[in-house]
Length: 177
Length: 116
Length: 159
Image (cartoon, rainbow over all chains, first blue to last red; front, side, top):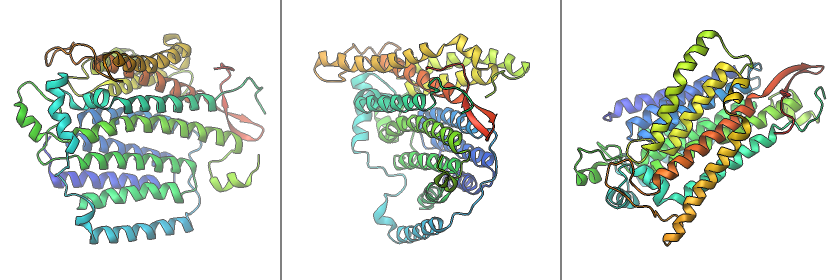
């Protein structure tokens, strides 16, 4: 899909609306479902920005996250009661300050959209097909050029799942404590 | 520039959910949104004008591919990060289930006061 | 996630769709170095397929299909297999060195150890996330004297 800047901005506005609704909604179910909407729009954004691997992974991760969260709030869909108080006001003030400074010094903080640095990216692209005979440059980076990071990621996922198994263990005690 | 302002807006929405909300499920939703926005920002940094995906097909000229492809390195970093975020949300949901079992509520003010 | 499963229509459709999901995930894993996809994409698609079975049929049927102990062993096998491939590169001169012969471009059997690594990562991600989701789904909400409580469903005292 060719990128069209107004289309990209419209999709990002939709995603922003999804995020804002999910934080300020009263019912827990609607906040989780609108977070799911934001995730699906993110998958379309990945497709527009030239990352098809990420789009596939993001859709399925989004669906599984929705199922996990909806199964923990199964019958507790009460309204989110209280107001946010002092911390919320401090966060909003800090955000307004950040936005002010960012808009003033915009050129020095970020590169213009569409001109990446590509110091290592160009070398990986140039070496992936001739040297490794793998047309998919992203897979060859994840599993061969930067394979050590994938080993660390496998360790992190393993530790997280071991944590889930240990937390929800019954330990053979009687019910009705 | 409006792209970066919208990204900052979404990030602060997620951060607001982590800092200022009183329900554990809203905090988990905030963590998830911050994860999404970080992935999006990485991929935005790697985009090139009129770029194509960094995957060579059979009818493509090789030097033209190297010139026109988007940066593959941020995509490789984000790919593992998305799956790690899923395992992280599963862990946080297990914590929330245990907290609800012990205290009977998802509200963090009441959790501080009920010493079970 | 109810224990009894859902209605007959959902069960019939899940029965038809599940082999296609498995086929799609195997295709993503094996052709990971030629087309978009790879180990992570295939792994999470397979997890999605197992979640579909869990929602449509209930926990007992899924345990008949893939018991929890075998899923845990597959998870560890995937992680150790990936580490073994990395250590095998030590024979060639460096940790993670790509040792196997790289064929011609666009073939299935090319690019050295990348296809084996994809298979190991796909096994690990799918089995690991399946274990986490099944254990999360076994927390039941029962009514005790103090009101609503989450309780572990009593099938497993020692996991």
